[in-house]
Image (cartoon, rainbow, N blue to C red):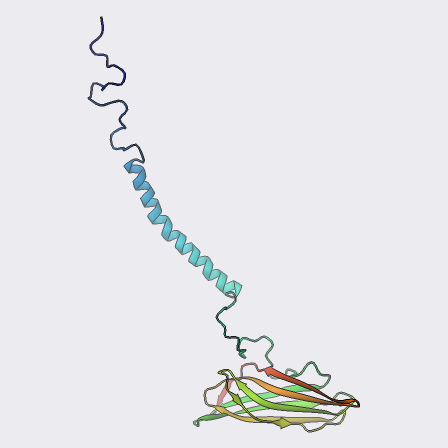
Length: 206
């Protein structure tokens, strides 16, 4: 004799639900409550992650120099070249003579060209005759202003101050100047040619 209240295995229970069915509110996967928690966490976490990456990127640019600029056109400018020559610097350290940039003056005028003045103090500290020349001025925009200023031939221990006066287009920036050194030796003349980068020259009014 069997008990009528007993539910056979695999059959529906007394509430009309098969034991294999998942609990109410679930389709066998994530519950609605878990899914909502994941969505909320995702919506909060993504903005925090973006802000963190941005913050660390700013720190890297500030203290790490911002990295190498791959978009540079390769033109040297006075402002970003650590080897640029400024007032008080030797223009040709590779010679055993002294060629010191004594002054660099750029004046703003109301005309379409501005006067540029570069003064160099040259001392022939070598044992043979020497000559120093200031040639073309190269501008940051790629243009060039021709010219030639020379000490003429200096005997040993002789010194001379020369000033290169150039007229450059208004608003342009002097970037470098071509220089030539002639060292008169017994076996012949040694020529040293360089394009010397110039440090930023402040513009003066009048």
